[in-house]
Amino acid sequence: MTTELNRYTDFEGLREQAVALRREGLSLRQIRDRLKIYNNDLLQRLVQGEPPPEWTKRPNAKDDLRARARELRLQGMTYDQIQVELGCSKSSISLWVRDLPKPERKRTPQEASEIGRRGWELTLRRREEERQAAKRTAAREVGSLSKRELFLLGVGLYWAEGTKDKPHARRERVTFVNSDPGMVRIFAAWLDLLEVPAERRTYHLMIHETADVTAAEHYWADLLDVPPARFGKTTLKRHNPKTVRKNTGPEYRGCLVMRVLGSADLYRRIEGSWYGIVGAIASTD
Image (cartoon, rainbow, N blue to C red; front, top):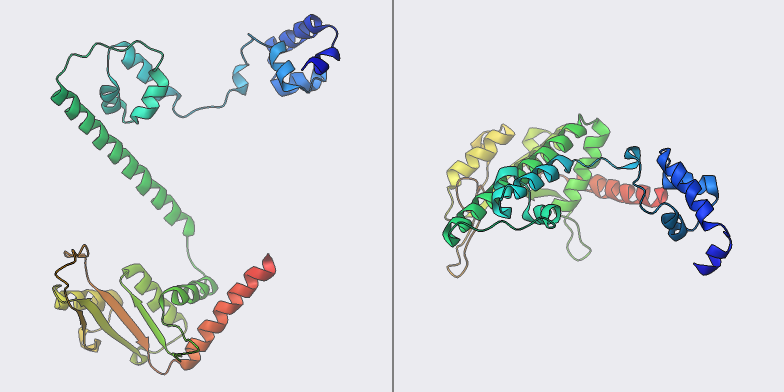
């Protein structure tokens, strides 16, 4: 700093110029360029005490919340009460109002706990609304899929979830297993795109023995618009009494197994296409 100051023999004169420029509404960058001062510490000293112009301040979506939180704190509200009122986190409230005097507590620990619980529930609801809004926005951004996009998506989906050939176990047949209805629908649409006939597609269920097997089969049949009679023998998973299952209830419908008969050529096309995708990424890099 001393060396840098030595370059400027008239500090007060520079400060006078810097303050004048600041009051004209110039930013630090503009003052730096105007006075040819490239030392940030020295520049800060020259404009010390002068507030930045309003146009240089970044807008903050939480400015209104902050102002309201400070207003409520001055009215004597606690962090819990402000959280219930505004729906923001207590960590944010703490940052906004920590310089203000603490209000006198006038409630029992039970009342304080109830207020805290309501505030947390409000925060959880707000977070869930933000999650769902982000998901809806992302879904809208996808739009429609071209045939090429659906083809590449299906190849990647199969390579992640389908049966694959191994050098020690030749499995050049297309078998797709999944419990997610969306993934099953995409794979079925992919087979439609490749014009795989319905008679070459087989279905069967893998499901826990305590589940409603009939209801699950009808669910998958309705999803794919195929008769339940097309389903083969269901594979039942035996219950281990030492484990606590979480995949229970009406939403549990097991895993659907979709196979394509006589599919060696189709499998080779999938594998080759996957390596083509990998190669395309490598060439792009």
